[in-house]
Length: 315
Image (tube, rainbow, N blue to C red; front, top):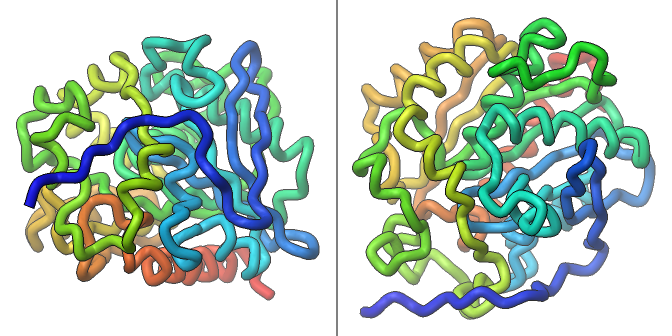
């Protein structure tokens, strides 16, 4: 069966209760989607999309059960899905994108602005996919370092502090590639279709029609990060001081995720209070758009509950 064609369009639809917002990060403005609970939030989930996607990835429209934003808001959390630097509103300002270190600093500023506009509850919890997982790990490592000691000196000494970081839930992102790192030039080329999606049966009808609104060009500076990622993963993992959960789809094809690989990954997080490594059955790389999205999202929220209990903020 041939792969469906996905052509970018401009205006994705949103689930009920989801609305667009903008976040200031110095001289950069990031676009985002937000869903809020009826009352004060218990915590704030920050969803970080992968390469060649956009914030709408976490508000899939093919089936009501797919959206992380609506699920999280119903369960008492604010959920913010951010267009990473070089995507959405910032694409024109950053046509080449940013390095991971720069994205980490931009995200820190944006989330500080978020906390000044909306209540964040007990703190922030990052749910990140694919390249977004690279940013989440970099961000968490930078948060753990002394002020002003971010990667490449990007974090400013006098920058205001973002809300507490409760934990990370990352899927579709490992350390060692199962493909040639040089084969990341364009995530949307036909040869990558199976790596990105897996079997058609993993996704609700109309997923690929609706996904046309989510895809975006991958900035060139992001692609340059691929070759050095294994070393960057090792360095970042050693610095992370919050709980971490890593999930790999059963049919993940971008990353090595055999049992020995997964055992090795968990061992790299020497400063984290605890690390969980899971597999998601019946899923390809884009877990949050598939039939198992609700299952994965509920597991992520259960992990958030563990993080809240550890922080003494449950209930």
